[in-house]
Length: 277
Image (tube, rainbow, N blue to C red):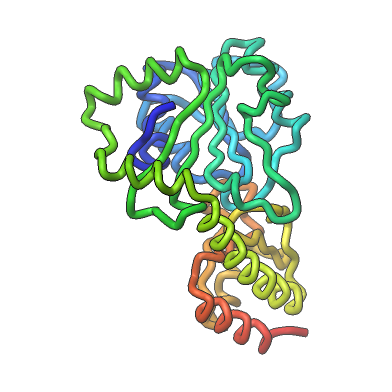
């Protein structure tokens, strides 16, 4: 395990840190844009797929994101095991971005590194974690990478020469946060309350919420182009992110966040109530 300068740094630079010089990075159909950015920076191509490809082709790296940003989808144990088996069969590292792992609502997310998923060891597997979500510590730039010792060591060997070392005081803060579950539970319940209020208001308008079993977002659709929904929400004074930002498959959804204050969430609920059927 090594600390990282936030999880975004690692996501953006991982193909480079792994010294990948050719091939394709497999990312989810609907995905956090930095997976693709990291591939482009390293000169690699991108394949969007939610299932292991029939043929590996020139795949060099696989990104999983469970719970997912933006849609809050959680991969099942069988889906995770299928990716582990595929990656090991073809010699392709599988990396899970698990930044929302402590924020399960309808299901309990499982880590790629769990023994019931990975088996007896972590060969070919990495997991990325962050304190920004569970501990509301985004400004600390505090992330973690763990998994296959050979892969972790190779990444560490490169990072330390790039000046990507986490300051000692931040590491001390990380240790304190990771040793305390009480603040995580308290924040999770705060998010749960926001989620329940906002989800009810969204559904009352006739919109549908897909996935969203975990994480900090509601994946909302009115079965129309996402920009039409964005305009509708803007007229109500509510800001959301267009799903097309996260890939073509998101073009009919918007992402609504639970990260606003309680007061702002309640204001959005009140404004949505005015548009309810």
